Length: 226
Image 1 (cartoon, helix red, strand yellow):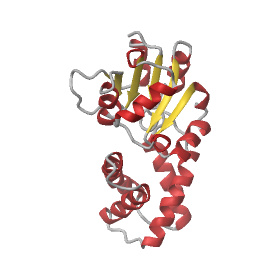
Image 2: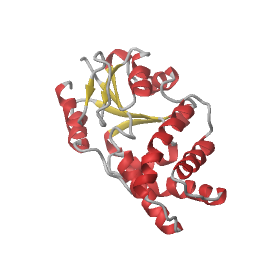
Image 3: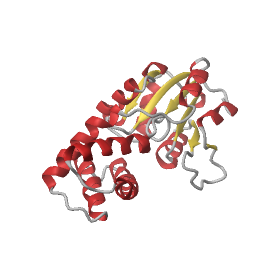
Image 4: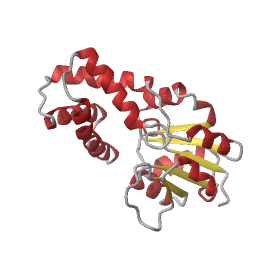
């Protein structure tokens, strides 16, 4: 690979969303007196959250509706009744508290140190602008990245080619010298490949993937390619 620029996704790639999300829910449930089994709730919440994020990527749901519906549906699935006013309150508090918990995937700092010495690093994320920058700052990795590109700042979401082309433009990078690393085959890998960038899939939860997709299960495996 003749790579000069590496673009990372953030959630589920460098920043361990599931761990940090669980800690945020534990905090807000306790402070609001929500008596629900956290393990059971999170088991339902994860696929529901993935479903609504897919709708959000496809411009089929708004940010406020995403934040409300994923909680509403998760509480319904665990048969716990919560009124709409409380759900809206929890949705705001969840976002407020999420950046306070900043567990990174194992090897994240080691790999960033290694890559920072050799390449120019950037972030492309579909996450909400205000919270993604807080995550980067509070987890002490903001300084590794030259450009931070969020879907809200561009107006489109991965895998829309416009966000990748915008990222290339402001980074003074060409597709041939650029690599995307992320957990989503649809948003990160195929999105990048559609604009002729190279891509590596971070398969942190060891899901089945096509053999023609370059994939790693641990961040430190990236050193084999870069």
